[in-house]
Image (cartoon, rainbow, N blue to C red; front, side):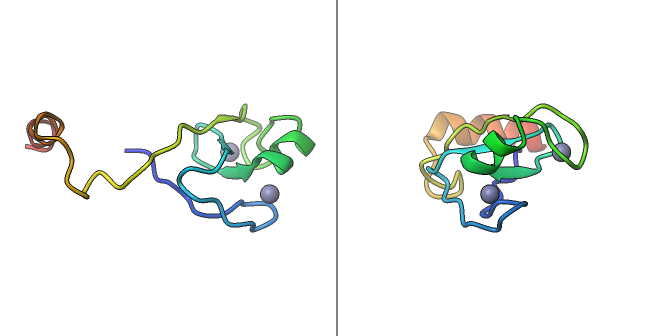
Length: 76
Ligand SMILES: [Zn+2]
Ligand SMILES: [Zn+2]
């Protein structure tokens, strides 16, 4: 599962789960301002930065039954 980092790697601004953030494939996380300044390229791995999908709540916080069953299957 994608680790949701809570701050920008470059400037340290805090990023909430619903805030716009950019990530590379190694999950380096940047705020939209830094991503813009970096021209959407990660300085750590030279990877392309893409918009991170937002997550409205933690999956452990009462996920729908079907989703839970699917997770259990995957984790078995
Ligand atoms: Zn930043
Ligand atoms: Zn990176």
